[in-house]
Each structure stands twice: as C-alpha cells, then as structure tokens.
Amino acid sequence: MSYDRREFLKTLTLGGLALFTADWFKLVDETKAASAGKLLPAWPGDPIPSGHDVLNAVWQSGDGYALYLNGTPYDEPPTRTYREKLEAAGEYDVIRALEKLGTGKYEGIDDVDLLDEEADGGREDETWREFIGRRAPTFLETLEYIEAEGLPSSSYKLDDDIDSDRDEGFVTAWCRNNAPEAAATAYLSGLLEGLRAEKDKVDIGDAIEAEGLRFVDGACPGNDTLVCAYANDYDTLCSLQRVLDALGRGCRIVILEANPSDAGKAG
Image (cartoon, rainbow, N blue to C red; front, side):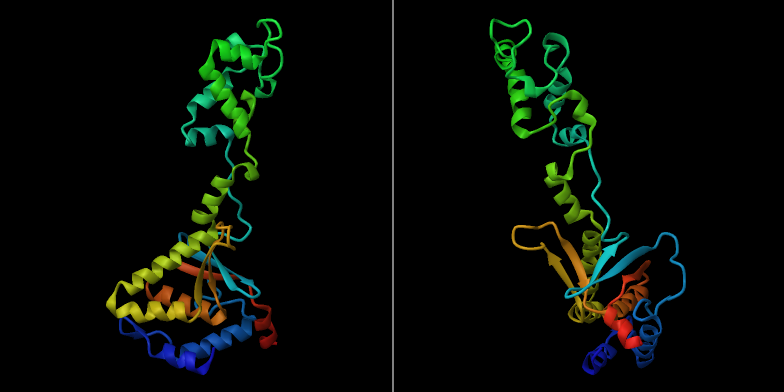
C-alpha cells in the first residue's frame, strides 16, 4: 500500500474511532509477510463462528481478488426437471398433454416425434397429426407447441433433469441473482449504500470503494451472466475486513487463493 494511500486512510473514522492507525498498518504488513498473503490480521487463527457469513477471496491474475459470499467459484446452478420448468411457467396444459400421450384415445402414440406416423385406428393413410387435429384440434396445438419448443416429447421425460444448455434462462437468472459471486456483489453494494446513507460514514463508504473495490456486471457484450465484485489486493481485503468488524457485521473474509506475488515478497 502506497504512503499516500495509507495517509489518506488514517484520516478516516467510524463512530469517532480511527480504524486505520499506524499500529494497524504495521499489523497488516507483519501478517502478510508471515502468512505469504494467505491470512488477514483480523482473527487469523480463530474458527469462523456458526452463523457467520464468509466472503471467500480468490486471486485472479489481472482482475484482483474475486469475492464469493458463502460459496466458491466451483458452485454450480441447481438442476430442475421439465415438470418444474413447465410448472414455473404455468404451462399446465403442456404437462397434461404430455401425460395424455399413450393413454385413452391416443394410446397408440406415446411420443410427439411420432405425430407424422400412421395413426392406429385412423382413416386410411391418416397420420397422428391429422387424426388428433380432426378429433381434438386444441390438443394438437399443444402437442405442436411441445414439438416446436423442443420440450420432452414423452411423458416419462417430464421428471428428467434438464441439461443446463436447454434451460439457459434459468441458469442466467441463477448466475445473476443467486451465484456466490452475485451474492457477494449484492452484499457489498448494500454495505456501501448503508455507509453512504449515514452522514458520518459517507467517507468510509467512498474510501473502501475508491481504494480497491469494483463491481462487474456482464462478462462481455452479449453475455450478462457474470455479476461479480473484485478487491484489488491484499490491503483492500484487510481494510474491508476492518470495516466489517467495526460495524459488527458477522462476516469473515477468507483468502482461498492468494496472490502469488505476495508469497514472493514474503520470501
């Protein structure tokens, strides 16, 4: 951390308490050197209390530390079945149509892919599409919707898990709202907004962001799945933890993967 940056932080207080003192900066340097940048000065050897949130920090070269709330970069979106997807969309007619395949009047057809095959019990050379269209046009419309949308074409597939590539909207929504990196972004954005909402804490909120926190919304043009918060360096993580502790937030920052250059400096 540069001299100017430290001198600026020393001027800030929270509730009349100076958080960033010369002694604190000394502790930051000592802890960084002793742990090769893997531990923070606050509670370095203590277990995380039950019920506390955890901000996991993972070094990403060129970007800084990516932050994950109560999770890691390896967390995957949950799966859901076709039935759950259709229920969420209110497509109960589609569910009923799939469940009717292979039963009752249309017991000879158990798969939408068979619509253009000859119908059992129909007129000469009549396909299932023609037979069902003549007998139940509304039902045919639903089957053709299933066919066009690439939905499961047999009733037994209703309770199969959907491949994530075929459930893009659901996966994108999870990435933007529920993934650990998105949760960290919401948590830290809320923290800064809360600080800036109180007159005596505005400077702390501005300083924490200006000194090394940044937010990314969208991996690149046309790809909005990534919502993530980054901390520039080890010193930013230390400062953030200092503020979290001073505010009484039950949140611990854990460095899962440290900046390799910090280890080099320690050595």
